[in-house]
Image 1 (cartoon, rainbow, N blue to C red):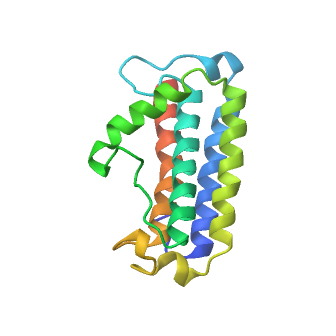
Image 2 (cartoon, helix red, strand yellow; image 1 turned 90 degrees about the vertical axis):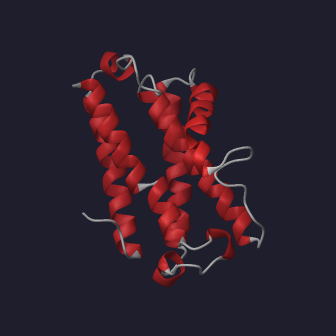
Image 3 (cartoon, rainbow, N blue to C red; image 1 turned 45 degrees about the horizontal axis):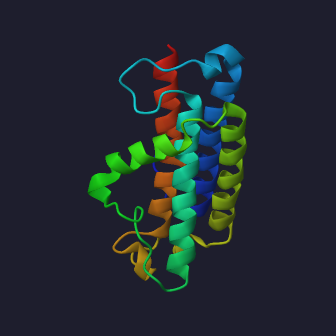
Amino acid sequence: MPRPNSKSELLQLSEVNFLKLLDFIDQLSIKEQEKLFPKGTLNRNISDVLMHLHHWHLMLLNWYDVGMKGEKPEMPAKGYTWKTTPELNKWIQKQYCDIPLDKAKTNLKKSYEEVRAIIEQHTNEELFEKKRYKWTGSTSLGSYIISATSSHYDWAFKLIKKAKT
């Protein structure tokens, strides 16, 4: 499915890609789920990838909370710019590298539901109209949500699949 352009497409693709990712992981043996990825990847195992997704959910939730109060959120995170996202991702990996896989799955599912609730409470226009909210700049709320959900889940699926084949 192409990039979502409506609330229903966003809800559908985020759920499809989320479930595809979790189903793929669950089809692996426990040993395979916990096995380290080949050297050269930032995220060293499935837990790292899931916590990466979880942390990006948390950042999106924070941006949303701050932005919807009429304030300017620190994006992507305090002390980082969009150009320094690779350094931010390294920081994220270090913060969560000891999280067990079962906890990573639980955390991700919880934050996924919180992001999904935001999608559900908005109209198409609120999600996809560019410059509707001052805090989203020249883009739309939906663009930020797509980046943190459906697109990110697809990235994670491909990364894990590549590491496991």
